[in-house]
Image (tube, rainbow, N blue to C red):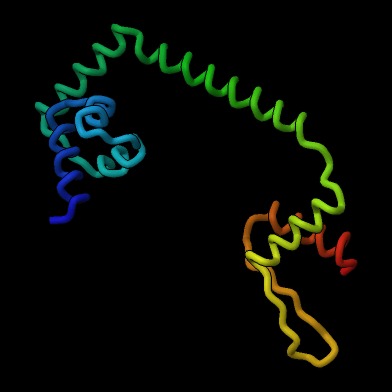
Length: 146
């Protein structure tokens, strides 16, 4: 049995005992709630397990944990937005030299050329991110005059 299979079984066993995500993460030294959620998506609980989980939910409501989580999420969102705005304020227009370096790096990592037809050159670029493609197109137009 693989290490992951063994870990998954331990995680599921703890969940069926009524343990919360945080209790499971701490008990097994894990970090990702997302992985737990994925592993639990098709899990069917016994009546006893459902009762334990319901009791844990009731206790969480009594302790105002859900309200505390909502406040924490709001603070994190506000902090992220403030960081985004600060980042935008510190970024200025890209100079021609910077565009040349960015374009050269993109070509180096994602581009290729072909000269199948004599006297012509085909530039290929393999990236699906629209922002990256836009920057590369700007490089072609402004730096290479294509």
